[in-house]
Length: 475
Image 1 (spheres, one colour):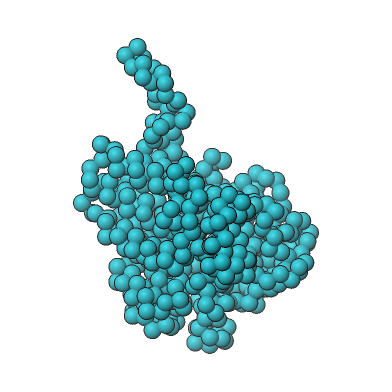
Image 2 (cartoon, rainbow, N blue to C red):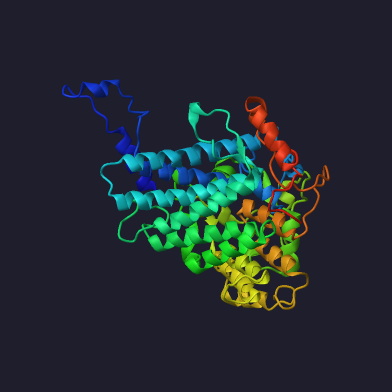
C-alpha cells in the first residue's frame, strides 16, 4: 500500500513549467483539478478502514457501545453521551466526504481516462461500487434515514433530503448485484490493487458476501426479500476462508500504521481497558482467545467496570497485538459470513450445511484468524456451554453470543450483532444506567443547516433519539 500511495502522490506532483507550456503556470500542483481515479479509490478505501478501525473517542466509539472495551478516566462515551465531542458529526463527515465523495470522483475520473480500456473501466467502477455499498450500509445502520439520492452534490445540493432507510437498502441490493455481474475476467482492474491484488474472484466473493449480509440484516423486516436475496448471494459464492477476508494490510511505519497505533501508542495515553461485560463472558467460557485479546498483567483476567472510572493498573489490559502498527484492518471476514449462514439455516433458507456446522465454522475461523492452537480450539468446541447441541438458549442466543465475541476489534459489527440478535445481555453503564443505544443521533450541523429535511427524517424514524430502533431491528 505504501508504494501505491507514494506513487500516486508523485504522479500528482509532476507538474513543471516550461517555456513551451505557459498554461501550467496557472495550475496549483498541490491542489490539482483532476487526480488519477486509482488514487482517489486508494484514499477512499483507506479512509474507510481508518474510520471503522480507530478508537479515537471523537470519531469512533463502537468498541465502547459493544461493551468490549471501557474507559478509564473519561467516561462520557461509555455512558452514551456522544454530542459533546460531536461524534455523530465526525463519523458522518468522514464517511460522506473522505470515503463516498472520493469514490464518486474516482468513478468520474476513471470514466474519462483515455488510457483505460472499456473493460478496465468497468472492473474499476465495479470495485468502487462494492466499497460504496459497504459504506452506505454503515451510514444507514448507524443513523437510519440519511441523505442518499440527493447526497454528494457539492455546492449544487447543500440541503439534501433524507431517503427512507429500507428504500436505500433495496437500492444497495440492486447496486451490489450489478457490481458482481460487471466484473469481467477478460480485463484487468486497478494496476495496483492493494485490497485483493487484482484477484477478480475475491472481489466477486466480497460482492456476494455483502449482498448476503444486506439480505440477512433485513430478515425480520422483510423475510421474503431477505430469503430471495440471501439464497441468490449464496449461489454466487461467498467468502469461504480467511484468505478471502476484506482486510487492509497496514505497515510498520507511522504514515501507514493501523490507526490503533496512534490511539494507543503514539498518544501516550491509557484511556481504555477491556470491559467487565466482555471479560466476564470469556472467563465463564474459559475462552482461549483471552491470551490474544487481553494482556497477562492480571491473572485471572479482570475487566474494567463498564461506564465507571477505572484505574488503569487495577485491570486487565488490551492484548499486545493491538498495539502493533502493522495489525491488519478487517471489515468483513469468514467468521462473520459463517455466523450469518447459521442464522440463514435456522430461518429455513436454502444453504448447504446445518446451522451447527456454520456456527462451529464461525468459531474456528475466528480462532484461526487470531492464531489459536488447534488443540485449544477443539477443547473449546467440546464444552457443553459452547457446543451448539448442548449450549443453552435459543438459536439467537447461541449464535448472538459467539458472533459478538468473534467481532472483537470490530466494534461496529459487535454492536450490530447485539442490536440484531438482542444477545448477549449487555450491562447498564455504572454511572448513569442509560440503556444501550440503538443508533447515533443525527449531527448537530444537520439540525441547524438542514433543519427542514432533518425534522422530516427524525419524524419518519420515530424521533432522533439514541433509543430509536432502526427499521431492521424489529425485536
